[in-house]
Length: 488
Image 1 (spheres, helix red, strand yellow):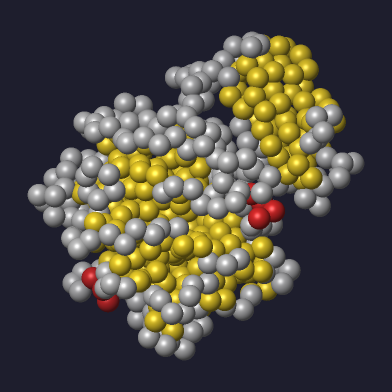
Image 2: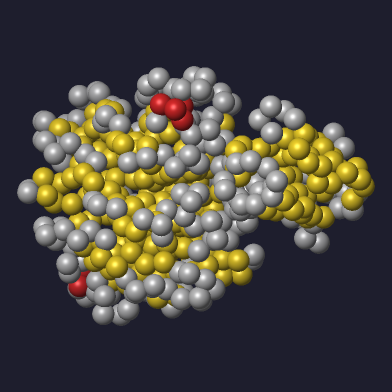
């Protein structure tokens, strides 16, 4: 990972404690329950969002009684303002649990999940027409594989991690698949001397694989957060992120910013009292080592943090605020902050009243700046809400943009052409140009007046070499630049 981060200056996260807030949902849509005519118990949810805002929401529905013996994975897709009907990814006789989903460059979903009966990990994907047959990924003789996570890189290589009971000790395992080379051999990521648990995975634009997980340490109940990366098949040494022996660190979540910098959030429990989590913490890599850890939230019981970093390098964090009186009943809190030293927003409560309860939230953002949040509730629902976080990105009542906006090109990386979309709130003089890393202009895609609305131009790099390019829009006083990658 050194080549990815060594060029990056130290990342100055601003250290501050979040303020307590009352429930506020200004700007957020009314939560909608995606489970239609399904009152079965929900345990795990997952979500992926395409750059253009297409949402893939998955959940596990348990047949009851007994819930553990039958479980199905369901999917609903939001395209524009409408949701599809629930789609059963697995059949009614299955025992499938803990789904996770990632999208490839074509926007097709890849899904990984665990199977309760065999305790193995299975994988399927949608090729644009139909779902592939389920494939056993783990193929381990122990038959005790759990909690898989999935990521798809810019070359459409699929990466998966899970934890498995190998000779009586849980280890974090990794496997990948590409159409060019097929399936890789299973690699052991964690240290065999300790229990590896709760893995998460992310891949940056250069194809570096980043993995975080917890590892059980003495005394009993003690966990620490660990990290490892893989560059072209070569694994880095294992980094220990947390060191406080009075805290049990657990449930880490990992995201990579646009420059390849990994950021990890997790919860910490104050020993020996392990019945509640007591804070949300984060650490980031500054090019030479891990900084912090810093405190995001430490005054109340927090659990299950989830992190997403958008293409503006804004970090979005959601977590469960646990009610100390009503055990295991919580609400979903959200906050965001920039990775370049900006302030974090006060936490906002997104979920339904505490009497309903909410747990295990996930968050993602699309290229327009709209933030999407999904969670499960104890009324057996799967709830979704969204909000536009960038001024002017959201639509007017007539469908046009409220202000200027420049979206991330799609596809990205590309070969040899890509589409750049932008929004104009009024008729404007517009220049859209492309530059190389030396600052030299290589193409002018638009130069002239244009009417208000959502517009797009195509960039054809047929005669340009592979590499990083930048595209810039000038519309009135609005100027914005974004990065794109040409790979041949």
